Image (cartoon, rainbow, N blue to C red):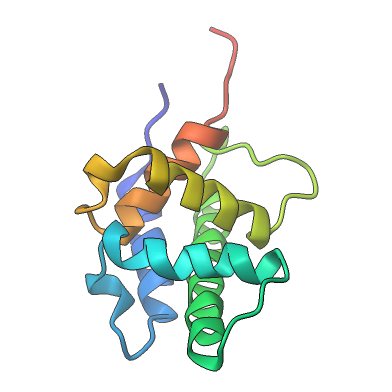
Length: 132
């Protein structure tokens, strides 16, 4: 299996902290993101949310978008084959859904840092498969 370089990991971590809100996303665990990202799924499914819920949903979507942007920068800086292979035309909403499903399927890991949870969710769903 290919490994991600330390530079890639640093870029990923910095990208998620760069969009951190006053709630301090960098210090959040999966337990903190699950309710907000569940609201993001509700928002995408056109469910009625109050103002605070809509704000939490958007914060999750911004977190996911920032993480993905950071991964994109790290991948562009790397030479060789990518670590994650996203489907054509995938979007932030799909990644939020993948993340929420992973968190619900892995409650034993929700104490981990939010960035670690999201990375595991992406790895489980989109790790590139190369012929040996």
